[in-house]
Length: 218
Image 1 (tube, rainbow, N blue to C red):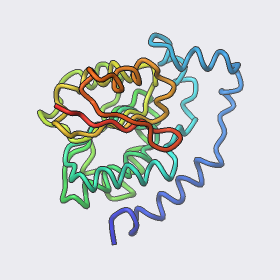
Image 2: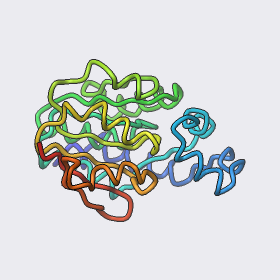
Image 3: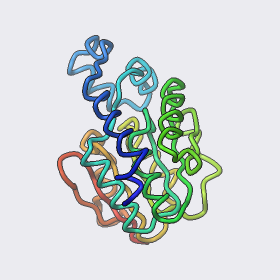
């Protein structure tokens, strides 16, 4: 039995997904569809936008979470960086893979303090907090220094407009063959153009309905 399918993690994830599916955020109603689209693609207003939605779960799907575990586990990942902790569901999947790979380090970053508190609680309940370092603050600052020399996997699941900038911060540390998983990458055309370019240094393809899976070539 894997960490993912055993206790305490499996029942915790089941409960968290149930909560996420039932949760609503009245704040989202204040934005029109056009305004949401503009703010999602803004490189200057993302903190105000996502801060107003601090009660929104923004969780990966069950299928994407399982994919994260499988990719990290099968590649033997030991060092993982995550952009966008939220309440920590994706973090739990990645940390479970580290546990089953024999240990490692997961650096994740989240600018909303209340979400950091909840994510730490979930990771503690799941028995995985010892593998995770949560950096509170803007990822453009928290991931600009003190990164490991070699990174095996990068998950992009924060403000979509910042995907290219966060990739730039981490890119020099990605080992050849490292995986980059970008959730909802269709909201970041600039990022997709970069990783899909023949000159970009990646092999990249859409995976499922909402994931871009890329591999660092050199």
